[in-house]
Amino acid sequence: MDDMSTMPGMEMSGHDMNAMTQGAIMLPEGEALRALPLLANEAARPSMFKAKLTAEAAIARITEGLETPILAYNGSSPGPLIEAFEGDRVEITFANRINSEASTIHWHGMPVPADQDGNPMDPVAAGADRVYAFDLPEGSAGSYWYHPHPHGRTAEQVYRGLAGAFVVKSKADPVPAEYGDMVLMLTDLRLAADGSIPGNTMTDLMNGRVGDQVLVNGQRNPRLAVAKGDRRRLRLYNATNARFLKLAFEGAAMTIVGTDGGLIEAPVAADEILLSPGERIELVVAFDSPGLATLGTLDYDRGWMGAGRPADAGLTLLTVDVSETPGAAMPPLPTRLRPIAPLSAPAVSRRLIFAEIMAMNATGMEMGFLINGKAFDMARIDIVSRAGETELWEIVNQADMDHPFHVHGTQFQVIEHERDGKVSKPPFVAWKDTVNVARGETVRLLLRQEQPGRRMYHCHILEHEQLGMMGVLDVRA
Ligand code: C2O
Ligand code: CU
Ligand code: CU
Image (cartoon, rainbow, N blue to C red; front, side):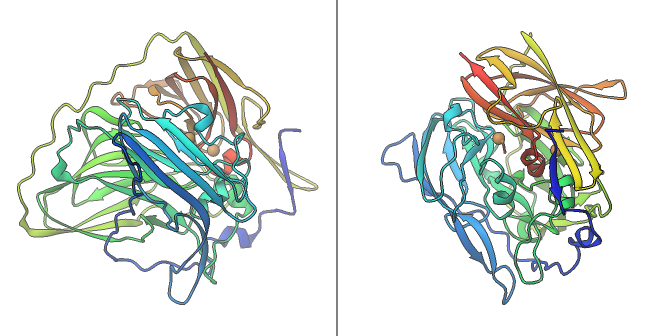
C-alpha cells in the first residue's frame, strides 16, 4: 500500500465535524464592494509588463479587536490584480519572504514555457528571488490566475491567502467598454474564535477544505450600486481550495460571454452556473429591475465523505442596489464575440481514472487520492506527449465525490460528458483549463500542448492534489 498516506492519530472526531460551525467568526456584511488593487506596471517600454510580487506573512484586521495572521502578495489578499495585453512580454520578480517555506508562482491556465510555470519541481526557497518571464501570445486574452504550487504546501499557502487574478486583455475586445470589467475573486475563509485561520482537519483532507464564509474580493456580501439598465462585465473566479459554487442571480439576468481561456463564440443566457474549484466564468449581467439584485448560492451535492457536509445553499455573495432612475443607455452586447476553431482529429487517446481509497486500520485512517492507481511522484513521468499534436483525454471519475480536472500549460475543449451510458455534448465550444468531473462521470476533452517540457495535471481540490491526485506530463518537441 505504497500509494496510501497514513495519518496516525488523525481520526475523525466530533470536534472535526463541527469545526466549521463552532466558534466561527463571521465577517461583517454590507460594505461597499472594493475592486482588487491593481499591480502597477513598472516597465519602461510599451508591450511589456514588469513588476514584483513579494509573498510574506501579514496581519489582517478582519474583525474588531482580532488579528488574523495570513499570507499575502504585496501585503494584499487576494493578491493584486495583474492586467496585461495580448502580445505583451511579462517579467515578474517573485520574492519569497515566507518564513522557512519554499513556494512558487504558478500561472494557472496561461500558455507559459514549462520552466516558467512555477511547478513543484522548481521551488523558490524561503528568502530567495526569481524572475518569471514569458510572452502572452495573440489570442490568449482570458481570465487567468496565479497561486503557489510548492510540493506538499499548495493547499495551505492558498487557504492562508495566496492567490490573485491575472487578466489578459485583447486590444480588439467586442464587449462594450461601458460595461466595465471587474474581477470577483471568490475565496472562502474559516476563522477560529481567536481570529486565527485553523489548520486542516481530517474532514478537510478527505473532502478538501471548505471554509465558513465565501468572500468576494476579501469581503463578505459586499454591496454594489448600479443604475437601472446598466450592464456589468464580471469575471468570477472560484479561488477556493475545495468549495463548489452553484451560482445564480436573483433580480438580474446573467449571460455567459467567456470561460477560463477567454471569450466564447456567442453570448449564452444562463439561469445558474456551477463553478468548481479553479474554474472561472465571464458574465455580462443586466440590471433591468430597480431594487435589490443578489448573487447567491444554490445547493450542489458534490459528494461528501463523513458527516458534516457544509450547507452551501442560500449564501448571499453580493448585493446590488439597482436605482429607480435609469442610467445612460448601454450599447447592446454583440451577437458574435470571436470564432473558436474546434480541435479535431486526435492522434492519441488516453484514459485517466480518478479514484480515492479509504480504509481504517490499526494506525488510523489510510487514504489515497490516485490517478490510474498511482499517487503523485515528482520523479516519475506519467504521460509523454508531442508538442503540437492533438490528443483525446478521457477523464473517468470512479470516486464517490466530484474531482475538478486541471492541466497546466494549455487550454482544452470539452467534447463530451458521459454518465450512466448517456452521452451529452457541452452547450457551446469553449477554452477551458479546469473542468468538473462529477462522480461516476466520464469527461472527454481535446487537448494540444504547444510547448515542450513537464506539465502537471491534477484535481484542483488542493487537498487532493496534495495527497497524490496529480501526475506529470512530459511534452517533447
Ligand atoms: Cu491552479 Cu496546478 O494549478
Ligand atoms: Cu494550473
Ligand atoms: Cu479531488
